[in-house]
Length: 381
Ligand code: SOE
Image 1 (cartoon, rainbow, N blue to C red):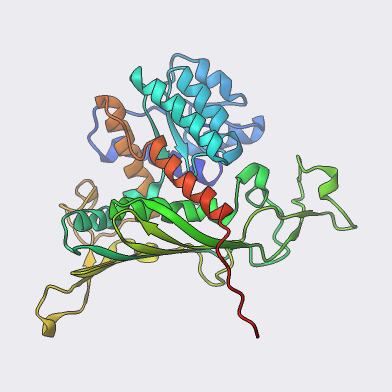
Image 2: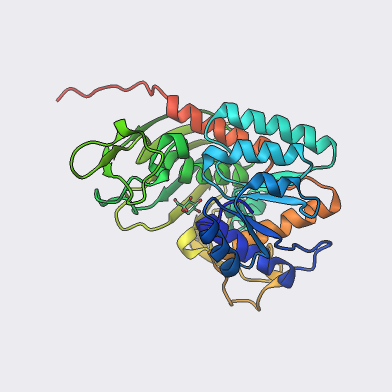
């Protein structure tokens, strides 16, 4: 695994747990974790359960006792690491979004296609697909329970940078993160809505906004050019979006609205998706991730109403391996399910999902929103 921050910790939990919960044809061994700071990555190895700590990822792809490279770094290194790993014959799991640009994503897809011909597998870490309620939502739409889909409505609301004194961390620097809320959390709702509906976004119109344009440099700030700093309290320019709003058309005829923001004060990790069809609707809320709301318009009118499906039955996706009905699961289980499916695919010679090609589609949507020159009609006061 390369990188050991939030996603590194979430992935480590999944690698530690997956073979102890699911009966799989192969076992994950946590051989080494890589990070630039030797002392800190050694501490992370001990804390997260990795046998070794290294400071050069190239060392990992040169080793023949390592089969998989798990990329958990900021987006500016995804392409370099993933492509080198694939060319070295390592299977690759790469965190979302796939890359910082469409060009990088296309190069990764080309490397993945070439590696696939040699039996080397790859996938992108859109973990929310693996929340059982989301998989159930997809299964119900695919089974036609809603009929033709008319509306898709998705928001992903956070508020961790509302305070102007929050420092200019890497997620707020375009050269490291590629974009702001759009690529970080907007990518999730783009992938999730395409996964749930089975439809692809064919066009968008949108806007982005950066509310706070200057922020204090992080105390240990490195890599920011001198020009980025100014004044007594060294500050730097925020070069990414704080919020992205866009509308879209999907290839199955649905119309969609998307909101991805880090300024929804009070919302901590507020991902919510609603799908409206001719025969009913489904709604998922990450803050109630064991539940799926269902409105069945085929019931007798007098009996119609929103029902709350508790997604903890043995026949629900993934749940059979966990606890008896009603004993709910959490955010981290989505990563364990992601590793379950990845291991099973690699071990059986199948392609894990979502593929780099699926992730490129998300990257194309991100790029389209960022370039969107939404035909803005000003309203005269
Ligand atoms: C920060 O916005 C973040 O950690 C995202 O990067 C993750 O993908 C999301 O699942 C939680 O929030």
